[in-house]
Image 1 (cartoon, rainbow, N blue to C red):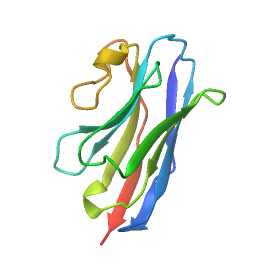
Image 2 (cartoon, helix red, strand yellow):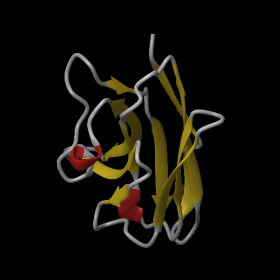
Image 3 (cartoon, rainbow, N blue to C red):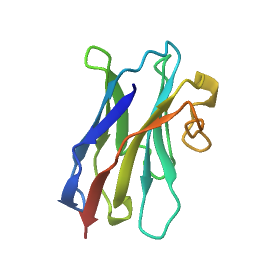
Image 4 (cartoon, one colour):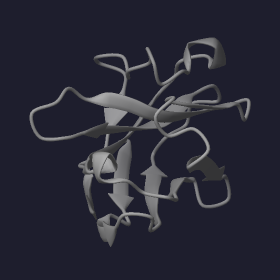
Length: 129
């Protein structure tokens, strides 16, 4: 059974940093897409960053240059380093994964396939001005 467990959220002032972690277990895809989504109150969920099994990374325009996604293979953990945080970064952050190929692994249009994708429970990030 696949499980994705996020941690690392919290409250921080604008300009600060946080690092989110997503510990994956039971995941055996050789080809995969993993990523982070966020949802603010009253807004639609949006893709933030993705990490493909070939090592390729992609970012939403709103976070380029400030956020970095990475993966520690020995720990099977996905990270999101968030720097220069802004109040508009506030929201619930979710880790997700499925077996999508690298050419589909872009935050603008990737979302885990229903029935074969996985989501974590979310971790709250709050940025105050």
